[in-house]
Length: 413
Image 1 (tube, rainbow, N blue to C red):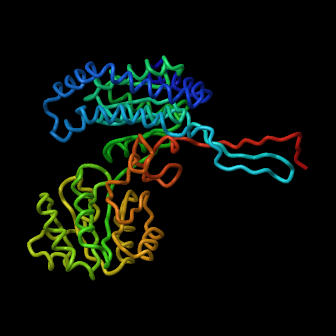
Image 2: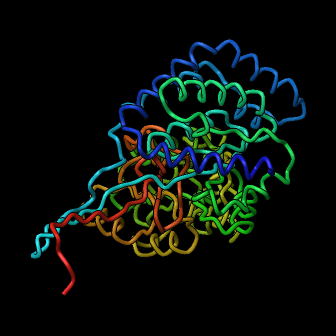
């Protein structure tokens, strides 16, 4: 039998057993995984160092994503423990009623089944994916990049052993070790066994996965995130939120890419914002009105409004009122994260109602639109889709539901 078919088939069998196990059993397995990671830390760090040494041509940014530092190791352990401590999403009654006939009807959360996750360098995705999948009663197939194979082997072996020691099927967590690019194509054909695919990586990876399978795909393309500073926006808050949104980590999907400033507040806000961003080495690209107020900055093109920079570059546009700000977001935004800075309740409510994004923030950094800051613990990514899961994808988002009806002999008349 083809190895990929066997992997998918065994994952399906594991998922069918997994859905019958208690939440306490799954939580114990996650805590055991955290303990196992701690016990094999030396082996893990050696494997990670070998991965880094084996790829001398990688960019510094790529190496940063690949490396397990002490901080990232702690993050990985913490996320497993946090997932274990979360309320069990499986079996949760989403709604219920008793019909006039006496029939008791309820809708309950159930696992999706088998989740395949295709991703690139970050080893923490390996543990995050396993944590979220197992917490929600799903089996997971992991296909990481070849550059992190040694690291992922150690992680997968540790987690499989911990799962088995806790009474879970080891095949609830499976790592595809082949570095042959054809393997992904074979994985995408396993609609008989795989229920959902989550690609984590660049736009080209997501596009290739989406176009190459009939299995449902949870997608996140661009993170073209906006902040709108309204006419009453506080200067200090605007500066603080803009700098944090843009500079805290420029390479991530919820980093700020376009700042919209109301024309009535622009003369007050722009110089302060520009000075603070200049100190951080951020290149500014502005509309014609912005360039008139900030001589010397680069003029923004149409392409700038459509660009996810993932770099120390920020486009700035002056808008005339909240309606123009929302129209700009509707045209150029990616539905990921957008926010408003205002002291006005009516303006914030208008923005919340009018902006159709997975996360809408009021007086907060765009960098907060993630699972940890939303109290979700580990997540497997952020979805910009509109069906099923939207925004950070945690254990609850990897559940579907089924209807259960309990009667006492009722029939249809």
